[in-house]
Image (cartoon, rainbow over all chains, first blue to last red; front, top):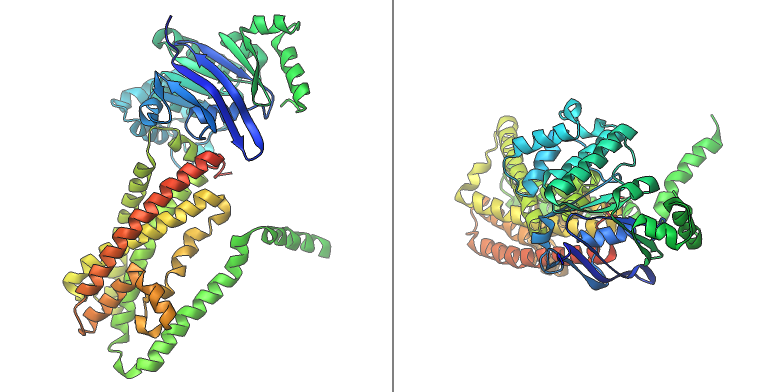
Length: 247
Length: 263
């Protein structure tokens, strides 16, 4: 059996009396797309922040590529990247300048070719010279995706990557992700509030509620287990139980 | 004109002061510092009027050197604020970058800033007042280098505070360095200070540099002793403040502040 590229074991994060993530364990296999679902406040963002080394877990461990994140941060993060609709990048730089800075930060070589390739792939030619401040939200999302793909990561964390994209661009991004997984064995942790997208993209799904894993399996397995007709109904059930509105 | 609309705006600003210590401090901070600085300058001039050779030489030299320290500190803090304003800290700290690499980059920015500012100020002083900072001679370079390091120390300290307390503490980027000005003895000798304040000033590397500068310009003594003090203090304080910065990063990661600091 192929060892997982990511293994989170008994991961817990407490902020004072509040437990954001409560003893969750999961893994991602090479080339797998794992969907992380849950209502607002379920602990998705905190989990991703812990996986990125931005938040220190209260207890538990994170291993990627067989290495412990707490002791091999640099080696691990070199092979990991992330993108989020809510992510920002330096506003006074042009799109291309931002990509060059990211490339340098990760020590990438042959930058001109890489930037050209990613700009073409994400159809960013018309705004590659534009100041980031002047980008539309859809263009900004493409820039953060370009930044994530530029460093050719082995694991990608995507927090609502298509939330502000037009349907045709969102379709292209999903195709790009599937292609990257096929060609390079990219593993992806994916969050979205678009349930159809989650069903389409995820090999497996983890449902979080109040910081705990309450369900895991393929989309169909989860739908069947809770006797619902689709993933959206399952999501609503957990959201209502948690007492949060679904955004 | 409607009074209720005017009052709504006044109340809107007063709300900010109810829970913002930096804003409240600012009301008292600048008048207090102005009073302290100009008070000591007045004392100095009143007490030593007949013994102060060439005000211009002292004051312009001190002003240029102080500005180098100030720009050095700004180079560190403003570089951090640029990342904070751009909400780019998450991108940086989720990359393989180490906190030390971040600090070194800001220090390089600081040196670049000081270099440009020094050229501009030296040129302007020469052009407008026929004042040449190079009259300090061979001592100028070690003085400047030490002031740059002192600027880094204040800059890293301030950056750590902003990282810890968020944008509320942003005002420190411009005001913190001036807290050190009275005890840096920029425009007056250390002996003008009350004894208890002299003891604090002794722990400040910048105070020794400005003492050294006055010794050179007044041709009264060798600045070697002052320089040795400044180098030793800078070395110790730099190590301490960098260690504190690492500790702050760890604390912010533990409390989840790093991802919220720009919000």
